[in-house]
Amino acid sequence: MADDDADDRLLAKDALAECSLNGELHFVEDGEELFDYLERRGKYAELANSPRPSLILLDLNMPRKDGREALREIKSNPEFRKIPVIVLTTSNADTDIAQIYDLGANSFISKPVTFDSLVKMMRILGNYWCEIVELPAKK
Image (cartoon, rainbow, N blue to C red; front, top):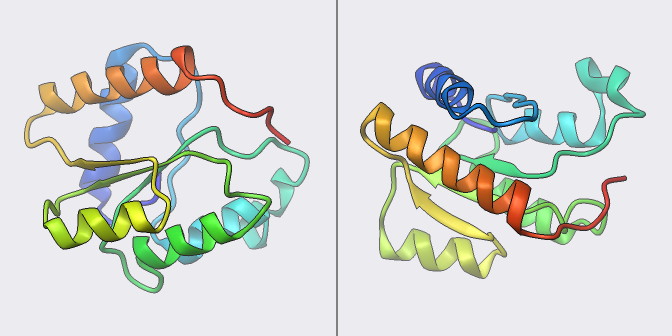
């Protein structure tokens, strides 16, 4: 999950735990750190032999490299383009929605406003992306 808001990261972690979904959730604070994580650079170099993420939750409005830039880079990179990207943001602007799908996002979701709604959304996402959908093998 790439999100610069510490409260949103904590809520997502708690919501995921509430869902009892198997899997790990790793957090980064912006698009630059997301690419450090994906490319196993800097503090993520020790993960060089670890599989890439199965799913990316991406906020749009972040410092350094925002979600639009990160999405554009992910979907233009042959090594990362098959990773599903779910844009999870406070925006619900039609222009953002259209642009995000044009850039190759798999889903656009406005962040839920209550914790219960966030838990429900995480449960649905986990069920869909981790149990129903067939994804390419991780490398």
